[in-house]
Image 1 (cartoon, one colour):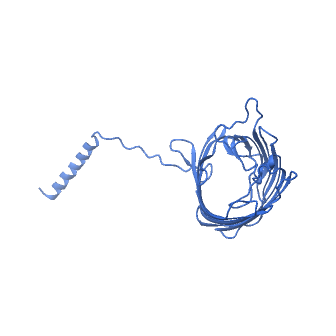
Image 2: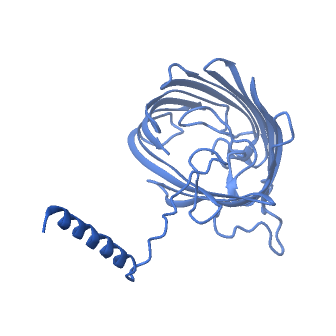
Image 3: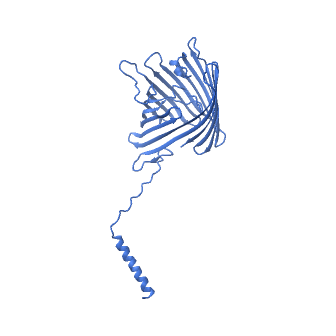
Length: 353
């Protein structure tokens, strides 16, 4: 048998074998893999949950810090110390388009070295309406930086319902909210038989997205069941873009009743009302480096014989971007009231995704 005959025979056997093998029973072909797809309808970081039209984003933050605290004055019994702290949160944001508008659910778990694990937020949003545990709709902007020194009545998280309409045209928006006056996560009571209602009602109106910045006015009213402790207050905030890389924030607030909302964390000091004035600036020196500073002055009107007095607070800090989502921050803070003063220096590493 010559070489041509051998090659022809081998080729014939291969064709026959292949045809026979194709007819043999076997496992079904594997299904195509449904790879995760990017969802760009709601911004960066969202992806489609496979097999659904729901977009999900998992975000979080981890912080580690060291602080030196210097307490002075006879009114403060704490001793100087150096403290270490670590805290973190993770949030799950799920959104779906519907005939009712965007349907959103969000929950956030927070942990720190002081209070353990907390459910910091958990709400459902349909269109303009949000129900569940959420941040107060009233503006909570304070100073820039680590210890931002916000306005107490507006810097509030509780279970309730709110509505925020942000498509009025020209950047105008308006919102209102009704919340429990308790920070309780599990079934806070706002009314029961034989008792007065206990709640916080809030509102805000403003304009944003302007070339010069944004401006808003917010107000709160918080009522309590016992005693004459009701609180009400109003705050105006301006965020201004003065020049390239320089931002300025100015706000003023008035609070009356209930020890002025414990703005100074001095329950029982007989504070009838308080006026807050604050100014802060942030400058982006280079792409990775920003510096900021701020000052807040609180004028209090206290009952006769009260030990409460005006309060002065200031901070100065830097924020340096080491890598994408990784920042090194440093800040010094000073506060003074009556015969005591506080000085704090803190450094922390922050990872955000």
